[in-house]
Length: 143
Image (cartoon, rainbow, N blue to C red; front, side, top):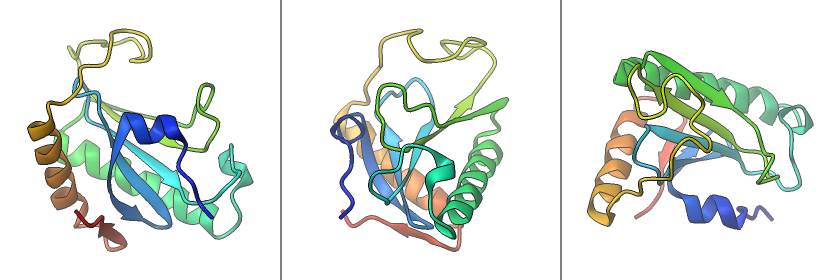
């Protein structure tokens, strides 16, 4: 049975599902930041995913990054599966812009998180659900 790591639950909100993965919005409002989490227990690395979930996850990651870059006109997409602090496999998708609060440095540890106010968090989740709806396998989470 899949269980989301408590830190991922605390730091993000569920938007929906894409190709066997949760799509979550990170709560740091400084950056457009989505997290793709394969719903597969005990996996720390992409290469550990069973086929065809590995292929589906990589394709979903590419689709997500492309959609973010196109709809936001991002200067750079940072896509990473670090997992040094949270061992559960999760893939960060962060749209970066020249002049954003941490540019050109990595965002980790650059500044404290600037959390969405609750009303703006719900609006951001709805906006991402609308954007992601163009992807054929996207299923919005129930509210």
